[in-house]
Length: 286
View 1 (cartoon, rainbow, N blue to C red):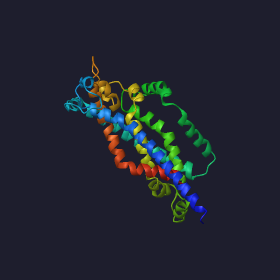
View 2 (view 1 turned 45 degrees about the vertical axis):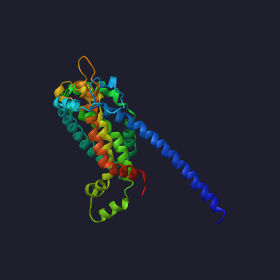
View 3 (view 1 turned 180 degrees about the horizontal axis):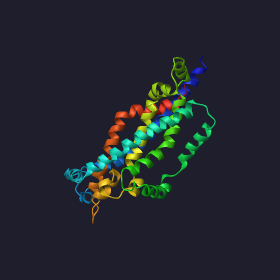
View 4 (view 1 turned 45 degrees about the horizontal axis):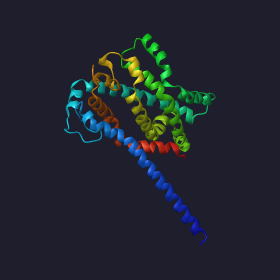
């Protein structure tokens, strides 16, 4: 027993060193990620040319809310509500389709299962931007160009491969004994899915909703390609409305960016526990 004490002490010391190294890297990463946010918020309260006279990380002198007033009074909430509508509809469709696709791929045995799953996983490697021209042509032929409906299809389609991949792994961790017990009580496949698998998959669905919601909220390429009129543009395109015709008003643009990221930050703070639980539940077997 006495011989084990040096080994235990050495292991604890090694763990302590690794902990401090991880802490240092975490602190460095915190600075890297927080610095742009501080820059954005501070300079959104300046006047147009104050950035040239004051340091960008100094407190604004004077503090002004004129940028936010101008942004709100020039149609910001119109862009905001259109983004909310597109993201909400796209997320609901994506979650429904992903759940229906992941259930048979994770819980059933049929001849084409591995082939279908391999095809879905392969779709994760297709870059989104190489499909801009085909999607534009298809949208124009369908008469959906310059409408919010044009964004829903691409958003759902490009979110599905990763979502199905994660949900399949998540649903495989649900004990099969639960389904077998339900089948003894007379539950069929559909009742098993809606009464057992889907409720137990809520952490995974919440993770997918947050992960894909942020991506859809910030998506620019398809929105810029498929939308033209100001009455249909979403929030990522709002910057073009406030950049100015002859001069670039950086504080106003930073005000738009601050208002744009606040909803995602608030949602992440509220649902961060569900996000972590969903990621951990899908990573642990049993």
